[in-house]
Every structure is written in structure tokens, then in C-alpha cells.
Image (cartoon, rainbow, N blue to C red; front, side, top):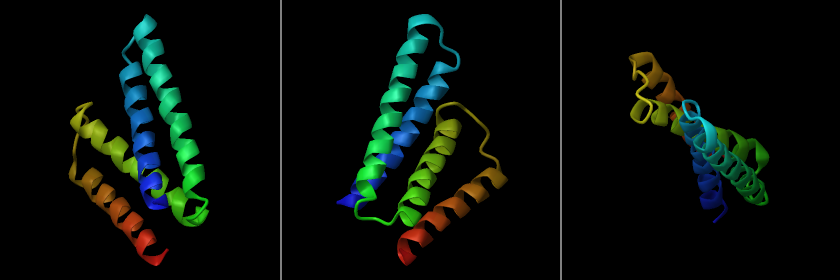
Length: 107
């Protein structure tokens, strides 16, 4: 159950990254709405991470949490914000995913 909470926390980190990206071109009330979403996902992500660390060592939970957020942010950048999907970018992304899986295996 704690691993599911940790995964959701990582996805919330991706959520606040998405809101931050959408807030970039926004103005006025729309900007405030995206920033509100950013704060919501940021706080929820941190709370869920804290909950997950009740059973998962912080030395495993934190890198997995940030890794999920980093992978999510890169994928959002590519698929939603139309950032380039270069070979090196995808190579390093796959290295990050393999590192997260490795931490889970040894943890």
C-alpha cells in the first residue's frame, strides 16, 4: 500500500510540473488558477511522500519520488509542451528509469 501512495505522490509531482508549465503563458485569473493547482499538487505530493516514508526508507522513497516526477516532467515536456525528444534526452531518461527500478529491487 505504501508503494502505491509513493507512486501517487510522484504523479502529483508531475501534476504540479504540468500546472507550472500551463501557468507560464497564462495571465490574470487563469495564471492564479494554474498556480493554485501547482500549490495543491505540491502540498499533496509532499504529504503523500511523508505518508509513504512511514514504511519505506527515506533513502529509497525520496529518489523514487523525485524520479517519477522527473520522468513525468520530461514526458509532459515532450508530449504536451512539444519539447524535442532527442536521442540523448531519451537515453538519459531511460537511465533514470533503470536507476529507479534498481533502487526498488535493492530496497
